[in-house]
Image 1: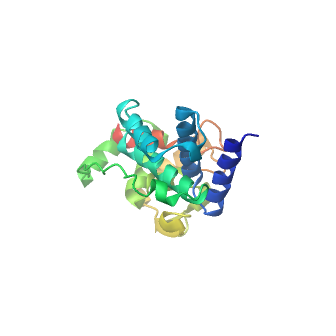
Image 2: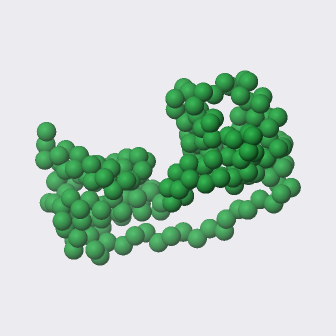
Length: 212
């Protein structure tokens, strides 16, 4: 096992203890591995100028988005502070400025049109739950069949924003599609599963259904 592999494992364990999400751990780890491969040096051998040059490379050569670049910068800062104890080295490295976009907010008629034009039963039910219950993408992805409380006409959202459980309404208007979906897809644990029942649907599929 190389020195760098040991550092990466220490980094992973540190994030696990800090209760980072699996996706954040994967993203941060991938960013540090990419940095090391780019220079073929141990992270402690990389200078401040080289770190800035690497971030510039992500933007100009790889064409990565601001969001992906911010993940890389956050990963580098976190790694150098907590694994290498080199806070001063990364203190001056700036985060890429946030891109300003006007959010697209659909009105009631547009939401109904989006849902009614959706022919796929799974996608239609997914949209109905998102818009009627006010769920985030990550919340609907992790929704379990047992989270649907039909007698109480509510949905339990577990470990939502702030890692807190909360409740939302179960709209009467989606019960017909819900019954059809359960009969056709026969979910056992996750309500919306991926290629196999033990895996959730992808965030990209949810994003596509919302933007179709």
